[in-house]
Length: 245
Image (tube, rainbow, N blue to C red):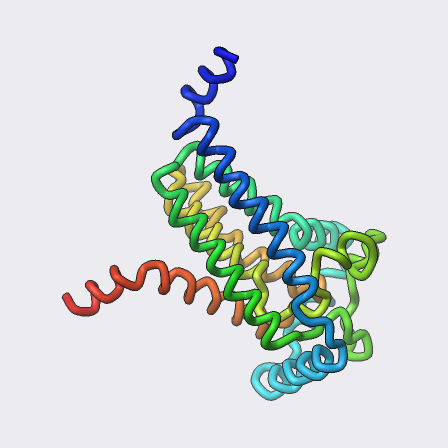
């Protein structure tokens, strides 16, 4: 027990009790959020209607840019594999590891980082309830291919179905979280090569979620807006002081 306590004092910023508290906050939020997200809205008719509305708007504005990314991806097994694993691991594996690293190595930035992630996901949950939206992979008639299915993963089976809302495309929280993680890590890591890699991380995740037909580009734009809103809310006093200065 003495060695256990000594390890906590040496490697943990505030000891074992605080680490356990942070883990409880994160996994408690994750569990509650996933169940709430899965139960928020399962109205397929409305979700498909909203999905077609996104398609119509995209065709009017810029076209279905995601189809171009899909054609590039499905012609390469390596690219298909990388984008598929990125989609599955960026949220919450990479996000969780990033939170843990910041907690252990850059603890002074942890609270703001954690709070930004939590707030962005809460805002996103509101979006899922207000605007259930079917993702591109549910529109094969438009040319979209569910690349995740090529790895034997069924979005609508088992725990995946229980813990996720299949009609939660808008906004893309993969995109929001990747932006928050990328910018935060780029700001606090010391080596320039890692700063550059973390700055590229959001763009790679955005590419991956579209290339796997899990999000429209408008979902990505909405995700970026969610991240920006979360940052603005948490930094509102500082922003007001800057404006008044």
